[in-house]
Amino acid sequence: MKRICKQYSWQRVRLTAAFIVTFAFYAVFFSVSRVYSCTNLIVTKGASAENACMITYTADSAGFFCRLAIVEASDGTSLPLGGSDVFPEGTRTHKVFGFVGESVIKSFQGIMNDCQVAMGETTWEGHEELVNKVGKFMYPELMTAGLQGASTAREAVELMGRLVDEFGYIDEGESISVCDKNEAWIFEICGAGSTVENNRGCVWVAMRVPDGQITAHANQARIGVFPKDDPENCIYSKNIEQVAIDHGLYDPNSGVPFSFFEVYGINGVRDRRVCEKRVWSIFRRAAPSLNLSVDYAQGIEGSVPYPWSITPDHKLTTADVAALMRDHYDGTEYDMSEGIDAGPYGYAMRCRPLYWEVDGKKYAWERPISTQQTCFSMITRSRNDLPDVVGGLIWFGWDDSYTTCYTPIYAASNRVPKSTNLGTIDRFDIKSGWWTFNFVANYAYPRYKEMIPVIKAEQERLENYFYDLQPAIEKTAVEIAKTNEKLAADFLTDYSEMQVEKARDAWEELANALIVRFNDGYSRDAEGKYPNVGYPDAWLRRVVKEKGEQFLLPDEEGE
Image (cartoon, rainbow, N blue to C red; front, top):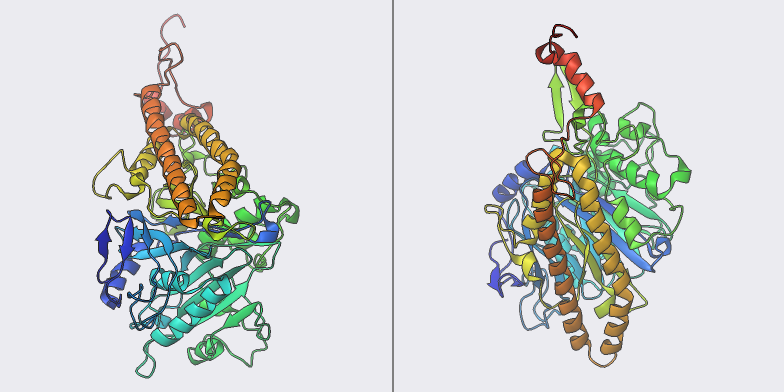
């Protein structure tokens, strides 16, 4: 963005000019953010135990720091986000709850609007020759414009398609999750290559997720062969095949059906290992009965790609969805807390780079859904049995999804909680929500299996408290909304802030408890004593095998 007007300490954001940006800025963005980041799960209403369409989103990127923010609705008398060329003068737009990136990319990105339309995204690597050099939109601006201008998921998908067709798109590839209170879609887009005749082109396709099913995407395009004569469930750009033909990516005479992800995506072995493996892990846990093979994710030749969408073995609650977003391939042969690479204490993270080489052979670490470079993760809930002011809910958690605590924030909120608006990436601040959760996670990493049970116990206690409280809160809010929607929004704003701050305070206390208990390599017991911790036997055997002679004690006389 060119300029952002700061009001109320970033709690409310209004753009005062068009946000046309230079390609040079985005070249910098590409260089620092292409780290196979972000994971989305989409749950349709029919697959939900709570009559809710849901989207999950992990905002993953090293060094990424953001603040929650609100873009106010426009009544037609002021310029909305994007300027007068995107929304003509007099256009009414929706209020959008989202975040402002403070590092890596500095722009507003919408999460949910006041009609319960919600979005998430994952970025994927496309063909370099298709990247556009000129255009108005990149995904944060495109998503925000879609949320400002649409009251349903379908309207948002159609609007985003029209906008990129007219104004152009600067990016490689993007999968955008879109849902409202009735249905869910995936919108996938990439550039069409800049030429003298067409310097702002793009191609895109959008498919509706069948009700009763779930789907996921994790930095790879997921739409394959799509119906071209079913506008109720699939829409696409007119040039979608021609661009591929012109760039030698598809031969219409081959007899092979046109597949978006096969043509425009990059589906090599390494991409599947760090991207599709996350989709496999979600699907295998949501529907164990399918017994999906890991072969495709492992890059095995001739293996079959995973289904576009699946029916879960049972309808999913918010707690179920949160559990699906917490994963290190636990309990499988790829469990990251096991083996020599996990160290003596089951460290389930792997430091970058993902790819490495020894003696000419190439290797890749596992890339799980839960990862240390997550800025925040979320679960949105859109519900058609509640008024919009109550139905739009975001379960929000700072930092690593495995160690965070999801707290309720209503999209109708008229301000953001204080702790979501504090801090910078350059200075530690325990009163900042992000820094508090980040500290607890990082303190636990070196002695993971000892500390994780303590963190998970507090996580379960607090999240269950929030889940149990929701029905009473929402019943009250609905009654208030019958006569005064503004008062209902005020009530939910106060409630959201109280719970967010309650969780941050609890994590500050948790940080204190962890430091006191797990200090200097010991684990302090309930009596205040410091028994030796030592190392697991399997780890000691590896030490003996590699360096046993160094540590071997000679037999003393008489022994």
